[in-house]
Length: 349
Image (cartoon, rainbow, N blue to C red; front, side, top):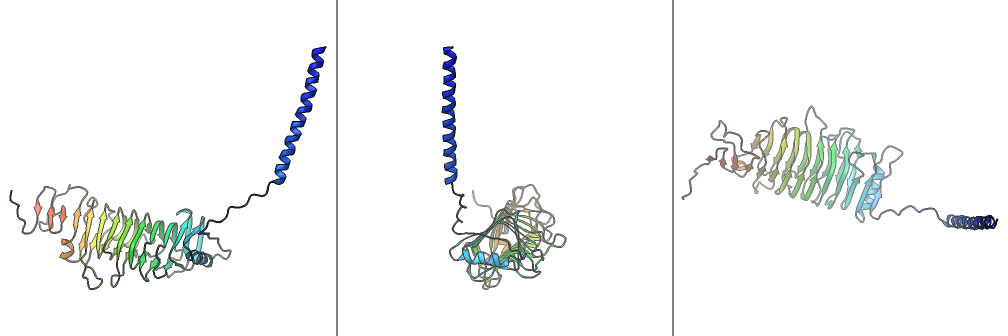
């Protein structure tokens, strides 16, 4: 009996103690909950403006206001997923147009003529990335155009440009980079337009231009460059009449062309800027597996060009005056190791 009373007493004491602890805990939780304030939304990041779509279906004013605001200090105009329709935008220096993803954020230019984004004179440090720049109106103009002043340190990354007849025009390019872009495919059955044009061929060209890992499709000419230092690295070119037309000094690394490039893979033409005082030529590395379609304006451009194919598995060719192989201007070494050159003399041992 003593044991039972003792156990009963312990049980009643534990019950009273447990109830006290539970009530105290609940009171504490209630106090904390009562004192908790609603969570504040994080402050906007300085230098970033998120574009909001307009209920009217025309987002021109909203986008341009964001560009103009960011341009005062420099920063990012950010586009969440969606289609933003506009009638033409003005790009400014120190502004970065950035989408959440190239496949889901689209700037749609609706008119049938005109340029999608026109840059102000001297638009230094203008950028576009992770966006699709398109034209539902199938405009005959340019997707992005810079033709005023000097364009320094422009950068376009992971951007699709389609719906326009032409892609990108930069008239006086200095230190410009265009990377991982898809350009064209607007007229697949009737290729027309120019993918990228550097310089205007009369008064302006460029220097320090890099075009890297870009895909060109359904264009009359994929790239036309008047720059005196232009690197085109790993381009993919299909359904185009001409791949690269250079009027300056251009290096092309490991290009890929398909059989639809029917006029010329590379077309080396004379310099037409300022009276043509600067020479032109091309250094072509890793070329040959998809055929040989080279064009030259004159013999001078041929002599200034150097071709290093990816492999030497082809004969010199039927025309002895134009052998196929490793070309150093007028000197050609064919797959048999034979040197073809005018007035070639063997060096003394």
